[in-house]
Length: 172
Image 1 (tube, one colour):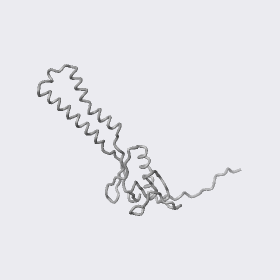
Image 2: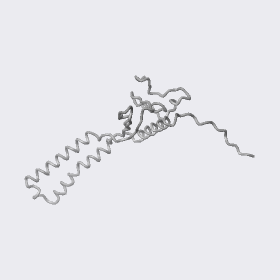
Image 3: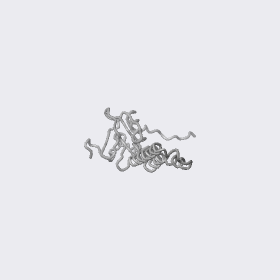
Image 4: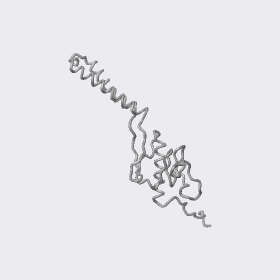
């Protein structure tokens, strides 16, 4: 049980708008009334804006890029001051150019194996709040769509069932 009375399980009362379950996975529940992620829970009606962003890049990859760029720049400056650039062959210049692309290669490899997380942000009570973050693009999309549907349900007056219609029968 959360401090505000919410749980990570959706309510079970039939007929209530809160029982409209839009998304449920371990630790993440989106109903017509509440959005719950882990221990955090918000009323859907309190979330006034939604937007998505990408999280920061992996720290290890950023450090590797910074160190390699600094070393390559240092070697270039050292060769320039010592006059070594004038004595280099064409093959050495090509090698230096290839090594100069190492930071770019590290960025691409780092983003491939440890991509930035997808983040879902919202405005709750006038403050910007990180509502949800995931490395899985599919899960992120499902949660974002479910929360958007919940907000539309709140905006349009709830999740009442449509009126029942009689089945169509052909005239004979």
